[in-house]
Each structure stands twice: as C-alpha cells, then as structure tokens.
Length: 139
Picture 1 (cartoon, rainbow, N blue to C red):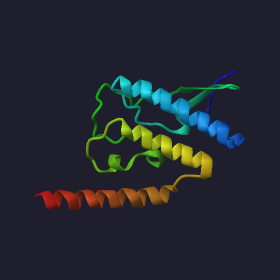
Picture 2 (picture 1 turned 90 degrees about the horizontal axis):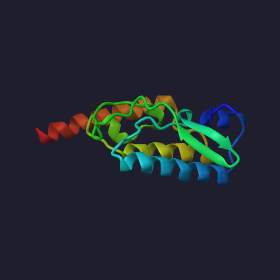
Picture 3 (picture 1 turned 30 degrees about the vertical axis):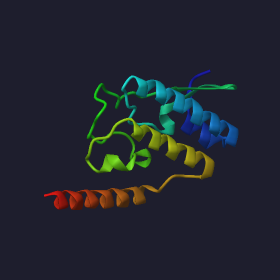
C-alpha cells in the first residue's frame, strides 16, 4: 500500500477523536526524537505527515527540506498556516515552533479548518508592526 499524507486522508474521510489523539501522540513522539537531537522540523503540516499503515495507525514524516543543523534560526521557512507567531517577528526561534504547528493541526482536525489565509496575512502585518515598535522602544 503506498503512503498517503494526513491531508489526503482527512479530505476523503473524517478522522474520529481517537484517531486524532493517536496522531497527536505519535507526532509528538517523532518530534521528541528530532528535538532530542537538536533538530527542529520547521514545516510540520498534514501534507508532511505520512500514514504508513492505517490500522493500526503508523505515521512517518516527509519533506525534510527545512531541517538543518542550525537549531536557532531567524529565517522564515515552512507554511504560514501552521507557523508559530515568533516566526513572524524575525527573531530567533527553536524547536517549540514545531509544537505550535502540531497544536494547529490537532485543533483543525478536532474542531475544523484553521485560520483563513487572509487572516494570516493580517496577523503577519500586525506582528511585523509590533516588532518594529518593540525595536523603536529599545533604540
């Protein structure tokens, strides 16, 4: 059976609460493994979580394109819809950004779709404005 991503499975049939909880714990375990090796995934989203087996559920990560050996980063990478707020501030961020992304995925699968892209752009502008104001206060 070919691997399918979580996005594909969720679009074609809804996941029940127990499956979402299992997704949460398996993804958290995979992140714990990466983070213990000082690696941030940086692009956690349903399209990058592969289902190796559905019964029992067995997950894998795909697309390690944004993973690098530099744990502390300022570069924006990944998908805006799942990005943690600190990634918009042009300040350093580390592994907790992956936990934010996982939280967004779980909320999406438990309660519905995440913030619309228009709202993401508005949030990005707001965060950028706050960053400029913060820098001006420090100067």
